[in-house]
Length: 328
Image 1 (cartoon, rainbow, N blue to C red):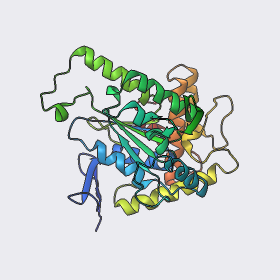
Image 2 (cartoon, rainbow, N blue to C red):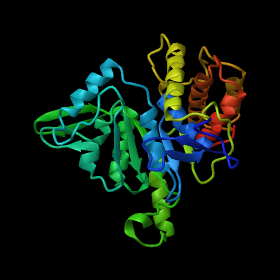
Image 3 (spheres, one colour):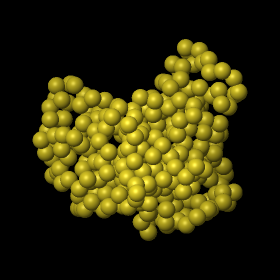
């Protein structure tokens, strides 16, 4: 008997023992995005109305992620020793899940104090950082977050000197279409047009880093890639097998995950094929941007690792485009 099964509306129900009702239902595209993010370390953006399963899906990314290496474990432990106010729960072998919403103070999120203390973005190093309602963060905080993601670190300055903390986390950005906070403010959702424009602009600053972008309210049909028919334990085994294939693929390269790949159109990778060549032709004709080409190519490689293909095919590229929110 299958613990999960595809439904007629293209949703997948996964048996999740930690859930109240023991299962979690979401669009197939959303579950596939979670698995892809866990395998390749891609940043993930989840958009959905109030009441959708944005939060549980974000938690599933950390639950499915592969174990940390010894070097990563030592680095994470060293960072957490500088935050005695934080209670360490669980073993160090699993990626740490750190969650912050729009009410988080900039000091807690970015780090502060004298002596210097790491913030949530450094505590999530080598782990998963869930940023909820990213469009309502302070504008300066959004700029600092974008800079930290780009640089992979954040530097604090004080009279005692400077200290740089690593910020090599995997981000999960969750948001609502209009920035509605009705569930918090206990009032109808009636944001003004100016508030919606501000919210969407702030959200776009951070979600541009996301290779995988899923709208839970309008998820199109997509291939299942073997996720149907598995519970959480089965998905973990699927992710572990795909991550091993990814490490084998990138043997000899200074990368461990597909999210770190830099796809140069002038120097195709050794796993190049007709599907990626077709994607480059669309780039040459200005049908897609360089950022879109890089994101789709990264996700296509991860999808190929999930099914064990040495070279991404056309199905992988088309599904990667769906996961990135474009048509290719």
